[in-house]
Image (cartoon, rainbow, N blue to C red; front, side, top):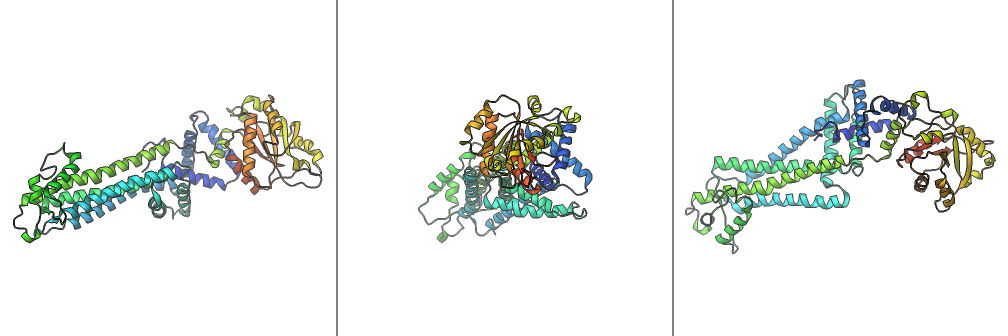
Length: 519
C-alpha cells in the first residue's frame, strides 16, 4: 500500500531509510560527514523546508538517485512498493475464495430439502459479524496498551510471510544477477517491524489493514456466491425449532435486524412478511408437501441484505480505519532516534574545530551555518570542566596547558566537577550566569561506558548553558608517562558518539583527544 503522494513518507520510503542508515553505520565517519554535508550544501540548504521529516525525505531521494545510478539491483523500498499492491490483491482473492467455498457448502441445495435458515444465518452472517466485532474491539485494547492494533497474527503477516515474499521478489527483480543477497531487504524490513514504537505504529496499522483486506474478500466472496446461487439455483430456505420460538417472534426478530436497510426496500424485498415466515416453517412429521415455493424463496433477499450490512460494511469501516491509522501514523513521523539526529547534524553543521587548528574554511564560511555568530566568535576561548578523578592524575598539573594545546584555545577557567547536578550546583549556576560566549569543555574518560547518569548530567549542563552555547565533550583516554591524556580507541569513541547523538543537541560537539576530527 504505497503512499500516493510521492513527496510524503510511505512504508517503502521507511524501508529504504533503514537500508541506508544501516549501510552508513558501517562506513567511515569522516567520509559520511563529508558526503552528507556536501549533499546538504549542494541540494538542500536553499530548497528544503525547515521540518526534519522534509529534510530527511529529500536526503532519501538524493541517496536513492545515487544508488540507482551505481547499481543495477533494485533498492529494498522498490521491492516493497512492487510487492505490497499484488500482495494486497492476493489476500483479497484468497479471502474471497474462502468465503465462496463456505457459502457454496452452506447453500448445498438439491431441490428436495430446503436450506436450514438458522445454519445459513449463523455461518454466513453471525460468525463473520462476531469476528468483525472482535477485530474492532481487541485492536482497540491492544492499541491503548501497546500501540499495535494487529497483534500476533498481524506481526506474522508483515513479518515472516512478507519477508519471504520480499526475498523471492528481490530475486525475480534481478538481485541474483547483481551478486548481492537479499539480506539487506530482510534486515531493513525486520528493523522497521522491530522499531514499531519509533515509527508510530505504522507496521501495526499496515498489518491490521492487510487483515481487513483478507476479511473483506471473505465477506465479498460470501455475498457474491449467495447472489449468484440465488439467481441460478432457485434457493429455498426453511426453519424449524424445538424451542418456543413462534412465527410471530421470528418475524419480530428479523424486522429488528432489517431496520438498517428498511428504508431502502420494503417486504418482501427487505425481509419476509409474517405470512412468509409462517409459510417457511417446517414440521418434519407433516413433510414438505404443504410448503409454498414463494415462502421458501423469500429469505434470499433478507440473507443478501444481512450479509451486506453485517459483514461487508463493517469490514469496509475497519479497512477505512486502518487507512486512516496509517496516514495518521505517517503524518506523526518525527524521526527522533540517534541515527537520524546524527544525520541531521552531519548535514546542517560544518565540521567545526576550536582554535587556530580548526578554523572554518572559506568555503564553509560562505555557507549558511547553523551555529550562531556569537558562538563562532567564542571558539577560541574555553571554560573547562574536569572530573575530580582526572585532576588526581600524577601529571594533572599540566592539564590546563594540555587542554590549551589540544584545542589551540585559551583556557579561561578550569573547574573540578563531580558529574552530579546536586554537587555541582554552584559550578552550573556560574556557567548559566556567565554571559560570555566562550565555549564550555567537559572532559570525560572515553574508555569508560557512557551511562545514563552521564547523559542526564549533559542535559542539566545544557539547560544551564542555554540552547545556543557551544558545548564540547572531550573524550580522553588513559594517562601515559608525561602526558595527561591519550586518544580514545575508535570503537569506544563510536559508541560514545552514537549515545550522545541520542540527546539531539545540535550545539554539542564530540572530540576524541589527540585526533584531528570532531563530530
